[in-house]
Length: 299
Image 1 (cartoon, helix red, strand yellow):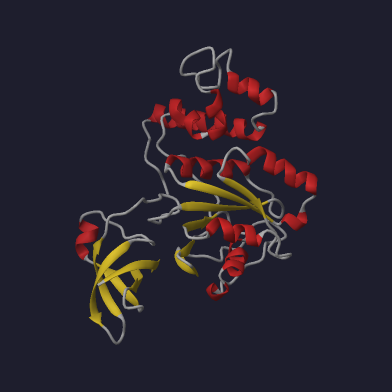
Image 2 (image 1 turned 90 degrees about the horizontal axis):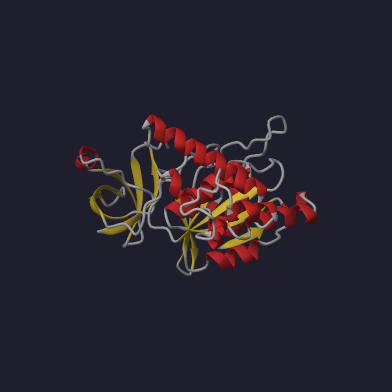
């Protein structure tokens, strides 16, 4: 019988099967021997062991459309990245790393800046101006004021979307707005340290109806860059692409070379200062990894 893994916890996989029942399954031992790890979002075949207790074994993982490294999920159409504009202040370096990861994995991205009610119109425009060229869509919302939620729903319609971002930015509150039946337990942000309590401990899929699905994933506070050659990094910063081939030197890394059109665009304000600074930091990090011969991603 076929089904889809909708949740995975401590070696148990919960599969929604074609008979409209949820089965608790364990993976075959051969999966571990072959280095195969089932992921939330996987389409699978299940051998039912106990129909009354809804128990089974995963028999086969069907071919994946794609597979994300962080968050570790499969078969997604796009990513909805949520970052707060205040409380906590956004870590734009972390946001840029996530955008890099999604671009590297060829996944379309929607940036959703939350807590719109906590910032001025000028501050909101500042974030939009930095990232309007970096994603398929950039949205601002307020969960408490129910602002911008309908626009989010429109962007998700008919697609399978992974919901991701740091803890404390309102992901669970947004999920509850989009899918009340999820009944997520939301955590408050610590006033002392400005960090959220991790309210999502595992990845899980929710149906929003009309062939619209949303992966909820745990919050994160750090992200290693993918295995990208440092000379190729520029190709994953999408606002750099219009200047490709216009620099004085072929293969310009946009770091030290004179006659660099990207650096000139930054000086004109066409490329965000923080975006460029984060590009340089990640470039140097990749160079150090290359020097050490350390290319293994740590999840």
